[in-house]
Image 1: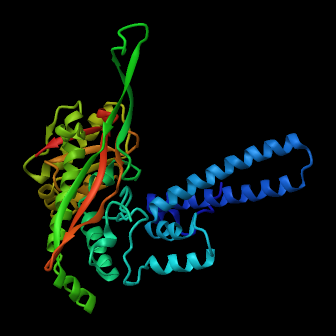
Image 2 (image 1 turned 135 degrees about the vertical axis):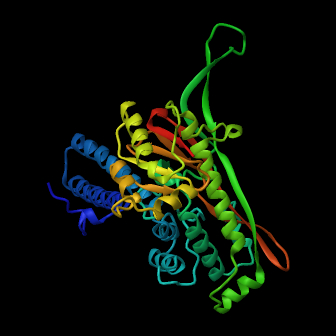
Image 3 (image 1 turned 90 degrees about the vertical axis):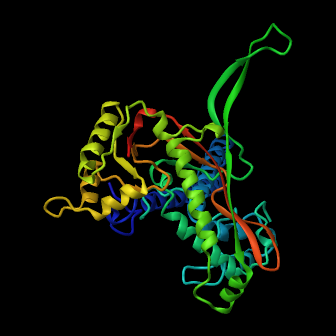
Length: 130
Length: 268
């Protein structure tokens, strides 16, 4: 069995980081599955088969959304940027640039860094260094 | 803008970053319960109650013909610690000062962290929260006055939980005085007491836990203790005057013990 979701030695990673990496891998797999079903639906002519695949793709939409929400809850900066991009009308790239600029970074940029709900984004500290 | 009203405060982006970073740094150390129990959420400020999955019989509205049950929930509590920051200090920070006086924020962070720990480990009767220690079915043992006895006491607590059918790994919440003694102590032969205790716990964490009296050994297998967060810890804005901005640290949460046998308290 491979452990390809880890880019660094797993034994050097905290439990929190390993969980984060697993959900990132799961998010990728769900996005791939959505794309595969999209292609199959594009070429399938049997309506019964298409109905089943539409249902299956709906499952993948749900899985992708749950994975994403979990990851956003664990990553305040990601959440803040996502909040500036997702479910907005208008120019996606402009929203993305503005959200990134407004999110601050780790090098001391003078911008408040809070989670999308305005919280400090502390959450669970299981596995965190003291 | 949400209920925290942060956008109404006369605080620059740099000022908010200063305050949020300081609060986060001051809270990460003492929030011991979050290192040892399951954290669910945050589920949002609008989330008001935890589903307990239970129901109680109530009389039917017309006196007969049907049976009626009412669902049981645990309402979330809101914790708030007020503090005020000098506007002059915030202005100096905007000028590039390195030494802003944030003592009021530090004190508020400590207070709300202690309150969270006390609620989780020792309970909060008026809020309907039963704590880890008070629900444990095991007779509380003495941790011992001398740190030399800590390994034996912790090992007995671990054994009690294991005999209760709850596997590890296990974690240890230590009150501040006990924690300080542990990290200062090397046993005979120079082996750090901290490392010895970690071995007894199957490698589980040892948490500095302000507000905890004595110590609590707790299983980390999951599903036994649930901290449910509505609004996670955040800084909100109350009001300001010419001299100070009045702010607060706030959170909403509930705490549920699902398996009392999964923890054993050790009295100081």
